[in-house]
Image (cartoon, rainbow, N blue to C red; front, side, top):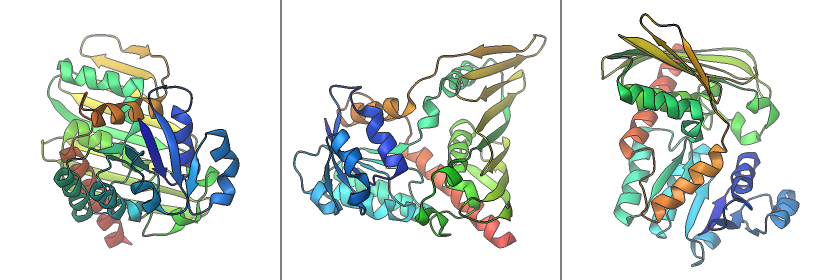
Length: 317
């Protein structure tokens, strides 16, 4: 399958590189970027045809699907454009900046009968896949509470000017690391009913130092908390508590299971290439072999939780 990508910055290049030479049935052939001079070597090395206009890619009959690695505020209009062109589309998170936009994007893809997939590669981490299995097994009993934390140094290390704008990245690190946590919480606990949130900042862009914390009540009756910090070393934890025990996903490949009357059991798994796996699953969905792992209802619930946090933070400023 021939893929095109819109956006060839730091993350767009990672997506292209994740497939290159690793799957003989999938290849990126075209890329759209507003700064072609800065990616000439990368394009040459990865055999990419470069354009500065998305319309060139959408009008190309050889392109069978499109990936978007573009500024957040462009996602909805670009998804709709892909749908109108009959191109299945994979969009990096956030799907949209609000629920209204998310619904527009999803409805456009449903009406055009094209696949819409979302970049949630952390679901492919071994610890998260095993956490999903543990929860589905029922071994920890009725779910009561969930905690999530994801922090990293990506904002300072991979600075892009558009990411400094408030309309592209409201609530500090929420659109970067925080959305992966929200996705995990929604996946396990369901839609959010109420939220309280705050942002505390002590150093501005381009190398910010700030924290986001939120407390949730889910429609399922579960409670939850999340946090994300920019400019601190990588850390990932999703901890689900049930009446019979808890399961904690750590880093990329560790899971700790704690059951009543038993010693904690820690298991370590081999690392995987999550970007390769999610693109392969997107292609499989386009080919009708299997559905993409994130449902439209989960996409909407995640954007809803995101929008609620942003509004709460803005009210507290």
